[in-house]
Image (cartoon, rainbow, N blue to C red; front, side, top):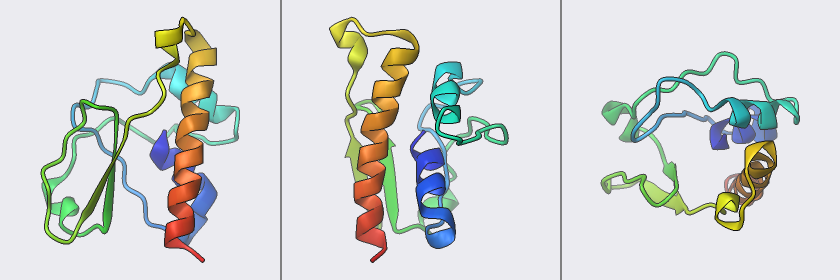
Length: 117
């Protein structure tokens, strides 16, 4: 979600890679649907693990959720976004995913302002 949102908002101003600390077998259908509502197409995306070699070439790594852990890397800023979890308030389905999406979008927009004037 974060990568799709950053690509959408930043265009070619920021190079974006997406990977998971424990990737699943498929993208979350509700996540894909919530991004599709904003015109963000994830059709070419597949879950994949983090490439350790790539980690040493980036400036920033963003992880989502408490469980996602990346070992510190010299010269690489690691940010963890412990995003809102609407299901803890009884909100599920597409409504849950929209709230998660909007939380991540706000964080992506803030991070983008750090990268670009």
